Amino acid sequence: MSWETLQIVWFVLIAVLWVGYFVLEGFDFGVGVLLPIVAKSDAERRTVITTLGPLWDGNEVWLLVAGGATFAAFPEWYATLFSGFYLALLLILVALIVRGVAFEYRSKRGNASWRRRWDIAITVSSFLPALLWGVAFANIARGTPLQLDANGNSQYVGTFWDLLNPYALLGGLTTLALFTTHGAVFLALKTDGDIRVRANKIAGQAGLVAALLAVVFGLWTQLSYSQNALSWLPLGLAVVSWLGALAANRFGREGWAFLASAITQGGVVIFLFTALYPYVMPSSIDPAASLTITNASSTEYTLKVMTIVALVMTPVVLCYQAYTYWVFRKRLHPSQIPDPGHGSLDLPHEINV
Image (tube, rainbow, N blue to C red; front, side, top):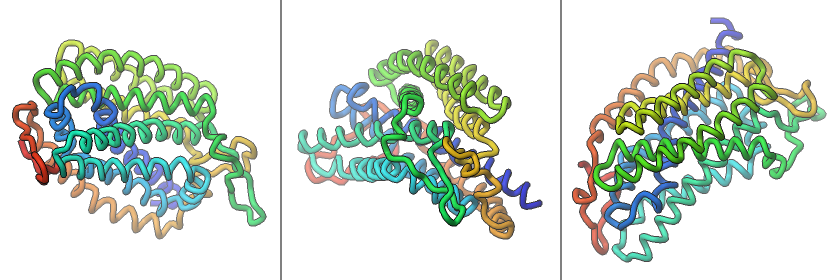
């Protein structure tokens, strides 16, 4: 393949990695946000957390791979993005660290106040990334204040507060609502009893809010910032699949609802990347400083080596994760989750029901 073709391939592959992250980590965040709402007792909270136990750390691998692929394939994009969005990405990183610690430490003690504090940590550390990822991607699509420095390199010249514009905040609320609904659909699929009933009801209510926010955000993006008309296609796919998810949830078909919701999460990512192409980071103040897949990419040799590695390793990772989901596919009920008691090592991922 030519260098130009490899650049397109890796732009698409990075989009696919973000699709995987939004689809899988999206319901993780949604479950965390809903923890104090959908679970009314400690037994129910343990059940909700257990649904994520075998899955959450594997889901985060998609973020690591997406970041690593961006660094290797488009180093200029990576450098400019992390320097300009430094504080926002730091907040996300801290939230993900706190969230992981909370999952592991919550059941180290049977004390109620101890567990309550970790439950709050799980909720807050799920809420922040769900909101900030939308803010970050909306700013990329909108364009950021980039200008050329003395060496001709693109440099971010804005501040953190420039990222908190109305369009970006709408993007953050959109991802928060979509992830929350996605998490509710997942809980309705993975639990039984009262949790399932509450999750089903929440999914219907949150889904309507998410639909309104997503339509406004999608039209704003398409009419004001999209680089090409093809992005109407994934936007339409996301809308249709979301309506399908709400309908399936309404009739208690949780499996179909989750599949349609997952397609929507992926459709949103594809929509943003399609709207962005061929740019990876457009400048809002100087078009000459905009980063494209051409001027931000690595060398042809680097992209060729990365392609070979991706062809070998990607099927292995997909098969492993698919096997994990298959093994832990059963529904959970609070009666099946034992109380660890004081000093027990009841880590969520150790429960195999």
